[in-house]
Length: 187
Image (cartoon, rainbow, N blue to C red; front, side, top):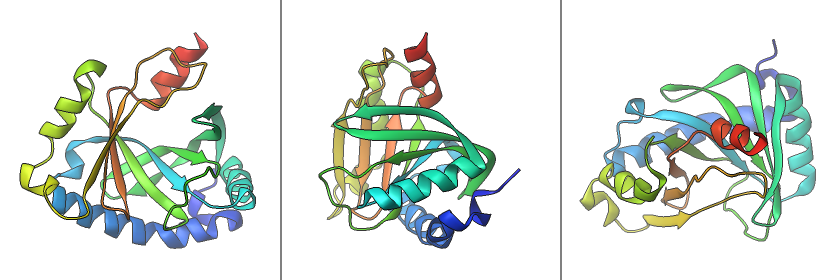
């Protein structure tokens, strides 16, 4: 079994992981979130060039299997099921989301966000997610919230998102795991 951190095509991601973990930890402290209290469903990357996405894809295929490939919001998004989970903060994460570049330019190429599951009714996700965050944390300069409902044609399970970001790192909340969303779409 090959570990993601030992694959040549993913060297830049191995080097970027400590930066991401530090930024995630600092952001969680600002939000008054105890990360170990949540289930991290998957972690996501961002890149600016198709060649980078292809290199990462080839590397991820060496340490996992392609779970899903769909077009969401006009761009290809791949999900990889890792053979050996990746240690990120308090979690062992075994699923990586690789979106191919879209129109938006991100400030950094590498690890960008983690997605947490708040199981429950999709209609109440936004309220339940906001309850996880301290009111004073949301009033800090540079903190943004974004509600969305990303979906591919193959997905039938409602999985809205509340994203909280400081521009460097993002934490997203969903009511369902990405595996459940992908599996439900195939049923």
